[in-house]
Image (cartoon, rainbow, N blue to C red):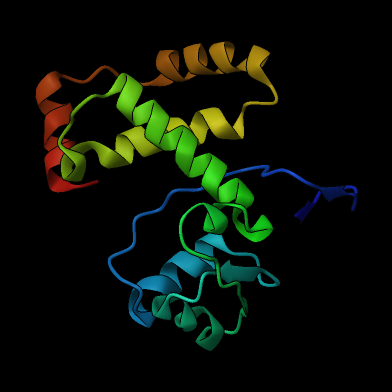
Length: 152
């Protein structure tokens, strides 16, 4: 559950963010936390040892132990996480039957993130997309592939 800007409680996920990190080490997560988490963020996890580093960084960390199988999917703290992951899997399986994950995953995740974060304002999505296309300089297929190969 999150708070909307007006302070009211919201019972659904508002935004999603997919960011690659090298590991769950302090050195890898510190730059990510600085840009991705608000100073008063509360991190909820399933107790995976790697999440302990967020406590060391000064964030409140709540551990919620989920059961195995279907029971684990019903835990309210992870309801929207499971919805988002289910939608992500469906999108990837339905649209992209097979792809080089290491090479292109960041692009597919960015697409899902973009659509999810703008799902309440669908009428503006196409005009925003057209504006982005018009403002983007053309690039060759080779340039696109090169960017994917160097991992940016």
